Length: 243
Image (tube, rainbow, N blue to C red; front, top):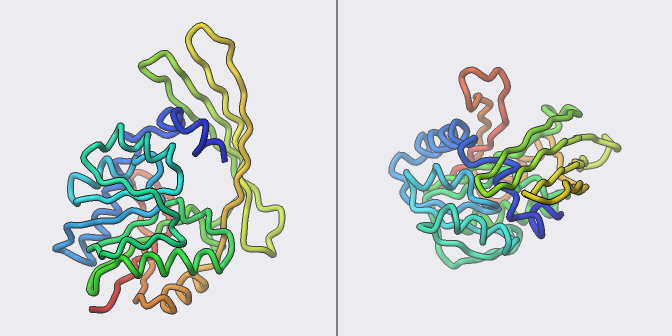
């Protein structure tokens, strides 16, 4: 996945940190409702640090990602946060947090075994009485094939535009596919086009709830919208660890 490798320095032109303010506030509120005194947060699959740039105002954040390039990008945005290289399926830091947060990076758990491993990692890092919050892009119930586009201009003369195409070639399996056509432009150079293909996991709510309970959580489902002016919602799983 080139977006998180050689194209990582372009990531904030694909999706800008400022655009995450409303949804980050939703996640903060869900965490605060579950653990009002939460102070520490571990994000698994933190990517370019877009959510963390807002959440760090409220929590002491430790950010973990499997991509060193994305961690390097996040450090430019969040130099005041701890960054840890690690895979959300296997990471073990030997300490716990008031909250563990896993945003859309959880979509790269494409099988039940991979998702189970991620949930176990979250449980291992959630203190008794704490909460883990999981926000996949889609569940089986909410999934719809779609296309979208966007991009941003940078202050350094670089610009990016993309087309995203989301499909599910085999509705009988546990994954869907996302193709990106990305146009990159640098000052004084001819624009270039890059294709990037992603395979992401897709599970029904009952699978999520079953695996969360099996991992040791007490889960609930939240379907509230991140933006009051937006009539769409993204399913969030709020998983409390008994304490």
